[in-house]
Length: 338
Image (cartoon, rainbow, N blue to C red):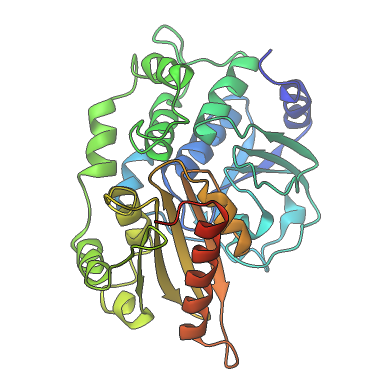
């Protein structure tokens, strides 16, 4: 048995007929892969399943959808009472689940995650912060339930979304959390999943609108040589000009903002309605989740995020300065200023 919580979760599933499964706000490959694999296993168990999300799926992740119905909903008006169980995957808080401030609905919640900043909002909480991806947690959880991708078994396709989630959340195995165990899981999944198709869609299928936003971010790029970090902020009107491609910021953060010589971490901020969405990336092992938490967010040591609100009293420019001030304080506290 990999997890003590496995049988408790399975018992709750067995006693539930109608189950909700989430994708978090602006779902990435790990969120999409977690939701699809969980939903397919639940359907294999004979359950009625509804996948819900506060945001649309990015175009380059649509290849994972194979007849699955993903419902974009308003969490505040959705009637949770029509269901017996809500399984939340890859979401460190209920706000992350719903894409905004959200109080716990009147439904039993199973919380399965790998973020150390998880708030333990579930009635059952399976949190594995050492896991490289939430799909890695699910791989072992499914094993505990007797479900393992096997070429000789007639299981649903969970191998493709699980492998996509692991590849996506490890930056194609670049992040240190991807250890020998992660590679072993990937090897097992590749017996059935097409790794090359996953890589092509995740890393070689960027839309033109995303590239144009990257251009604007690059035009605004600055390096704080004293505090050893790179940063850029992009305004809302720029995002609107190119159709608000919501993952463009995090994509560029993964590709470039943890790769610049002479820096320890990178920051990209994108203005939304009333807040700045910020992605943090570590280059030299600095734990950027600590910085994200200082700004009300969370995440992993190598990749984290936060949402900084602003209003008439604390405007956009002041909010940007707050982010940069916290970043410089963070650098000084850790003693890696030049």
